[in-house]
Amino acid sequence: MMGPKQEAQAALFYEFSLEDHVPQDHLLRSIDRFVDLSDIRQYLAEFYSHTGRPSIDPELLIRMLLVGYCFGIRSERRLCEEVHLNLAYRWFCRLDLSESVPNHSTFSKNRHGRFRESKLLRHLFEKTVARCIADGLVSGQRLAADASLIEADANKQNSTPKDDWDHSAIDPNDAPRAVKEYLDVLDNAAFGAASEVEPKFTSHSDPASQWTAARKGPAFFSYSTNYLIDTDHSVIVDVEGTRSIRQAEVGSVCTMLDRIKDLHNIDPERLIADSAYGSGPMLGWLVDRDINPHIPVLDKTGRTDGTWSRADFEWDPENNQYICPEGEPLKQFRRNYSDPNRKPTGKGVAKYQALKQTCQACPSKMRCCPKADARKITREEHEDARQVARDIAKTKQYAISMRLRKKVEMLFAHLKRILGLGRLRLRGPCGANDEFLLAATAQNLRKLAKIFPAPQQTRKA
Image (cartoon, rainbow, N blue to C red; front, side, top):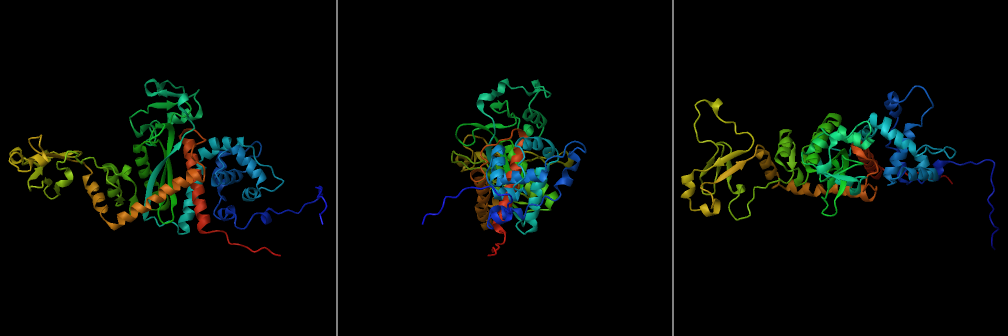
């Protein structure tokens, strides 16, 4: 029998509970257990006025931003619509059915204002890392570092070639926010001071972004998000935004290692990274801090003409000399100094050379120095640290580390494909850092939710 047509009738009273309509296995139920915003009002107190209209609750804004980054909702307009319609989002944001969702413009005012001035997003990220450490997800022994390019909100049509760009002609009073931030970071090692090489093009809307063709395709403007993760459970222990150049990315690792040492007392046994981080100064910095560099050495001393390279010569540290395959020494100094204080220090790049008469009479001269009178070898200041990395590369632990390094790349894939952070929406160094911090916080919260899901409760009949 066909039932009667249902007519919608308005009722005078409703009994409705959001708690009953959010599934027990919903991701937000697990995430909510690890979001602690109890101190947010006290943290922001000095950035609010004591007079005027009451502002929107900052906890509501942060919870809405977390929803957006956890579920890849990139637009703040769409985020407000989704929170308005989705019961689970309302439950997580502590919004009743009768309460209205804030206007999307509120996010911009708070992001560019009190949130940025107070470094609230950095504070939120560090609290999440502290929670991961407290729950035993971070041992701090094996860390891995890498960087990934994120396209900036800029295009070539609104840019200037490097020969025509003059930052000194910019009036800070009339410049947009992103341009002012660019002027502020010109002396910052992660941005303007990272390299003296000027980019081929500079964006008018976001001049701090880097014009790059690193993906072997069409060039674009970008920033780099730099991750430092613990390989036990792929928890992001620190994140830093920089220009998309190797010097800035390598320098950010030193910044992050120092920061987690001060904040979380994490002193790793090893650092895992790719060959971009295998320069002499970087390896020397790690070895000086008793951190084993599980990093391929960036070495350009190999020869392509078939003659002996520096690796074929044995280093004799006791006598400060190289020994060639024929057993002859290559020395840095051959003069005996009666006063040791007058002896050259040899710091920086040291040159070692064999005797001319020895090389001329050597039967292997054509394999060693066919076009030179005597063989010369240079040794960089951090060659000892390079050798430490070469020795580590021969161990079984190094092979394990190279497999663990892929965990960073998997996080970047998750960042772009699942969270949708393939292109930035905010401009300027501060905007890029804000997005990177929120995305890393969301990834850590999802990690906590996956490992420690919310307990399932059976509903009463």
